[in-house]
Image (cartoon, rainbow, N blue to C red; front, top):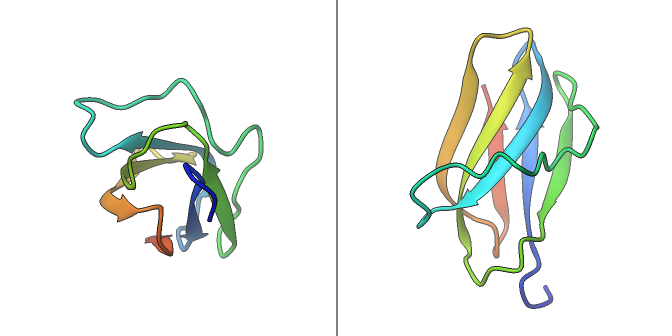
Length: 91
């Protein structure tokens, strides 16, 4: 992978469509919700996609947040290594 090139493979095993996806470096004190990494796309139940994190940071560990359309809940996963083969299955 090129320098600062990071990605996470996300699988949606919920009954809701994932409408937004955010990644913030794990050492940040809060969430960066200014950049929806699904970029106007959606991830339907039962599907997977690879999401690129192109934030220019040297960080590898990211906290991930998925917004599920039609659900009152958000899904979270912490300390995912996006420089390696980071994966997250949302249940």
